[in-house]
Image (cartoon, rainbow, N blue to C red; front, side, top):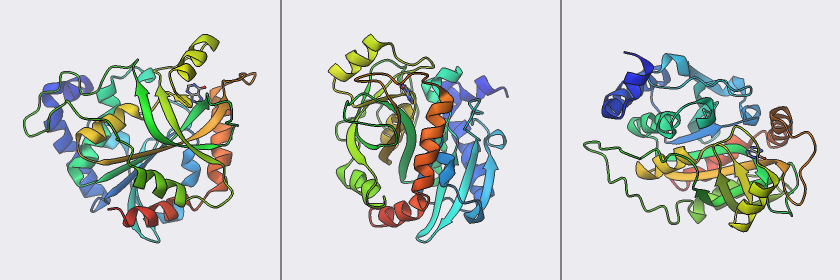
Length: 284
Ligand code: HPA
């Protein structure tokens, strides 16, 4: 069966079963908390804590990341508070996939018993008070420019696609992400605007998104967040502000720069997965 057959909407339920089977077998039991690591965030992984790993290419239906800084592995990591699932690498719609295809792993995780999804990513700062290296916990999002992953989904046994996204980022999860940080790290709560990319914003687009109420803009995670909400998972998200767009754009904005700033920030909070798992325990 080809990749597109596997991902056609009619076959989704079957594809999810196949992927869940592989994950359950390779990871010998799937944890309740899943954390996805975008650009630069792979620095949080301590390889000595990885108990098992499976490559995306060995999981039916999982898309293969093509972007520098995204490895494409699902890990079972032991923390001081038990196991967590870590997705090391993320797929983006700008790699040529639909929102549903990039969100497919979330369907598989939910099928395996994952109850909460925490997404770590990079974003460009629109709030003029933000500086590169700041962290922003997402309190809401704006998704107006992508294809909705739930478009056209008609699946037996799944809930309604008319998901109420009001309050999707629960306060207690936002607080958990924040409490897990070491003291002294600059961190705000803000609104994330999703754009498809892969180009960065024009000055007029950045000004428009700011006017619309966004504090940061990025090219990832929101399709997965919507699918997670659809599947009844708790959702939380934190971005590293890798560059600023307003009041002025840093010269030479590039993917390399985004990776460098985010990697530095991740290195400065190395034990974050341990403290996040501890905070999540109280909520799961
Ligand atoms: N725009 C969109 N996505 C991003 C940016 C940006 O400036 N920085 C990191 N991801």
